[in-house]
Image (tube, rainbow, N blue to C red; front, side, top):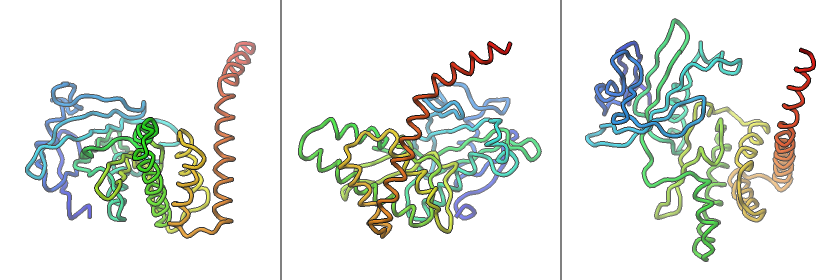
Length: 290
């Protein structure tokens, strides 16, 4: 799919993979004269993001029309966790390939338009991924909160339908061996369609496909989803039932998964509650030593 839909070029020290329906000039306009990312707010505007990346919103001409796109920049991030990827594959390229993999497997991800990488020898020192905006969508967590605040019968039905459909989609992903690297509510966009809801997965740099998921993989995704899920136990059961039905799990397997997730969530919250006092204690111990 990558070779069929994208072409390769290079400019200003960047290696570029760009969609065949887009012109390279559209990508060049985001770069300053020195080859860095443009700082003019009229060209790109920065939005809130995590400390390990920078996200911008801009206009991009592709397939004969203008679209809004998100630029996600992955600057060099030094840590033992990311050291191996500096030599292997950059974070933007992993997100690019994972998005195409999801689409190939029948799932939704924002369409990648441009991948830009700057390298120093074998090391990827900077990378940028441009993806098309998903119109009329919102984060899954925000949508659930919106429906929860509306106590009408229609909103309650919509919320239950949303939870069941999402459980089915996650079950299908796991059934096909796909592990999302960070399956939190903020990394899932939802859009209301005539036949229900469609779900779009973002932040796919650590999303992978395996021949078969291990129990630890399943636990990881389900724990991530449940950590900040504001839902009743009944709604959680609706999700689990839809998930289990899609995967064809037995009652014993479902029970084991639920207990495993509950145990893990409890452990994480316990560690989080202790993190403040522990950090203070470590600082005091350090001051005594000095």
